[in-house]
Image 1: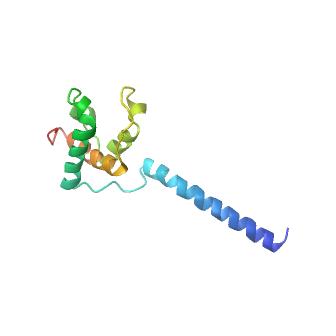
Image 2: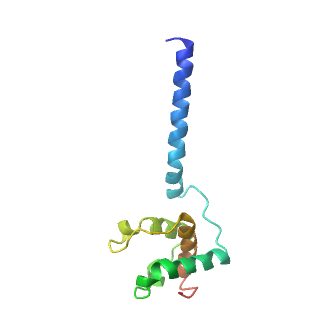
Image 3: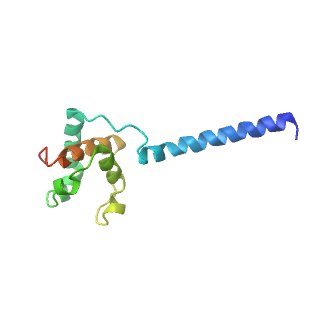
Length: 119
């Protein structure tokens, strides 16, 4: 095998590694390797709106505060992304990632002993 062939093989290997790393970034987020989102009053308010619009039809009857007690933002974000896996009666979250992050912030606040009121 000549030097040009080795260089080509190394280049292909590096490109493949970059693709693998790019695909693994969501896994890194899932493993908690990225910093949690900064929770602001505006993000919590947006999360409350998301809950009212996307979830309140059922959760008006199913209290959330006891279910999310002790959750932090990362745990809430993860749970929202795996709803049917965690709770068979739940459908997948229909919102965007931005809405998911906002809802996670709201649920984390709600989980602090019911610190904020439901919509």
